[in-house]
Image (tube, rainbow, N blue to C red):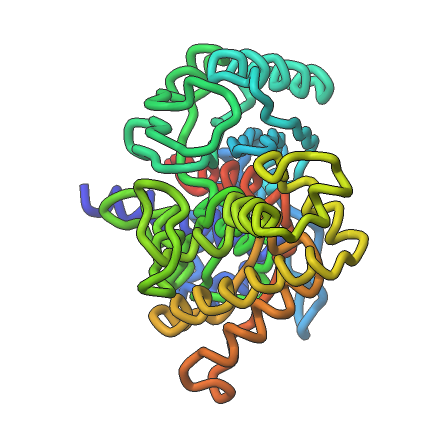
Length: 399
């Protein structure tokens, strides 16, 4: 039994190594694994027989025969990656090499209840399969990256805040998707899958310790150590929003901490601040949009920011500085190599990202000796769905 488990584990590890390298020779694999040539030959033959890998031409000669190159078979199977978020959701179809075959995105409005959502997703999946002339049997699974809190093991979205439609409480999303499509579904929070996706996109850089922070309707974060997502005892995606950065500070919601980061850095926080300041006489937005202070919306603030309104810039950069303080706290605990920042606030203006990074660096212990890399990522808005598909790929059984 131990020998069988070792064989299965090694075979899967070898397959994933080939996938990560893209195209690789047997010599390259032997230098990494330090096993005998005959053992390597046996495993490669099994992967070839199973159609999991294929030969990919010949490499350059180093004095003898040109080596045979191997890559994974991109057509062995397919994956769907699904993002469930508050503003927008997205669906991607991927091959075995995580190349996106198609991507669609739609707005989550007041009518998008879980029932309607599942029907819509099911219809779109069938449409994408038809477009690419694929059968449902070729799909290995559906990965879902969703807003938390979640029960990952049971596949349940528990009690997320701020969804525009009703019904998004205790939703057995994996069961609903499987019942509608016949394809097994797997769930993790969107911050984790976004980090998985970004890590895959920059795999050539061999980053081991990463942090992902999303600033939008809420604050969400994920951590990776030695290339693996750090899961807590409970789903901790939104915990960063409750980090206290000012002990006598405001409270965003009745259930939140006073002086928590979310009260300074979130869509709701900016709306609340703009409404409060409008009531106290700062009436630029009220007069321009002909609305009552309580009707000021984030879209108005974004529009003002795009037009370089001094007030909007002041509002967003104030949030950026607070965001930088929160980032510094996380960095001082975890010391990651790379920090990926995403979300509507981060992407609202170049200055938001710049000020947040500068503030974080100034408050990072050991700076400037220790300087992590800050990035908006390579996949950006496609990261959650890509990472969700990758999650299923990584969990795929290889015998």
